[in-house]
Image (cartoon, rainbow, N blue to C red; front, side, top):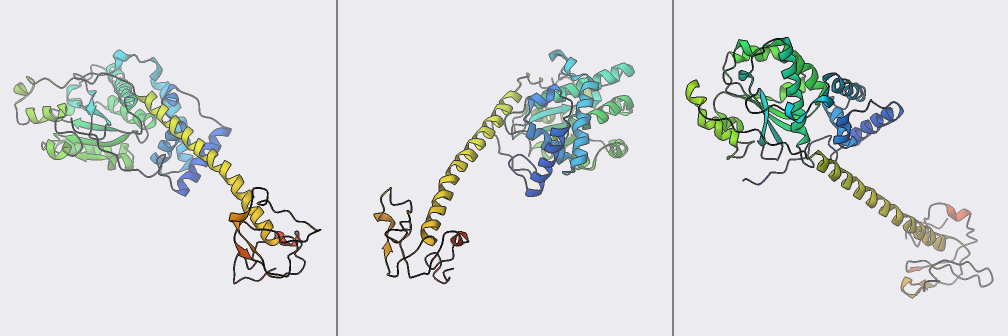
Length: 374
């Protein structure tokens, strides 16, 4: 088994936000705090920040469009009836869509085979389309920590006009976009006959520009199409190589790779995000605790440097010689002595430096030799 590759950082993701993107995210959070979206089960399977950023990325960080997308997701989830599906509703290798292993980065691989599906009636079209949607959701639930997208491979072998079911396509297009914004890394179509390009041109207006850009169309050279995204020993890649050039009869003698057993990993991903968030909160709290003493020490150094009355003679104060009690400056009117600094410095004569006047920015000669005492 080839070792998994590490995905390069994507702009607009949790750990790779620009200042503008972070501002848009905070704006979206503020709107949802005042008017939350309806809760659906999918919200519990992903950290909130990842979910909101996905909607923002899908709409180029347009807050209003992302807000609409978030509400559309909740509506579509309930309309499709996602909470009513059972484990047995997930499609298998003999169906039009199924899950088959992972790519080189550990992302779930979804295989689509539209050539095997011919609808019996309108109900069959809608039911199969919604089972495809459920299968895609199960593919997402398999994603491990740090992964947000799946890879889709369309094997168009044997596709003809009888597979072009308008009702099925309408259901897929209308709900997939609402339920899975920015969930598809890319869609690689193989075994594409030139006649299929006519259907592709007809389908393009129904897809967003971003979705169209993720589609790659290839012929029978499956190594060129998939060799850079799938391990060389991946079962579906090996299957495509084995059936290449065979007649339909000989092709069907070679069994399809089995569907991957469902093992949900979304809870691992959510726990990992929670752990990262907790660690970030701890570090921020730890830094804030350190800022207090630092600011206090800086103020005391300034106070010792610039406040009180100074003696006319020149003295040297060394930080190494100060005791714990001497590090806090104490002004003594009786002795009228020099206020010590935490730095080694020389103090020259000054006239009546009262503390209220000295609360201005320190520009004395001990901080900046070129500056004048004020």
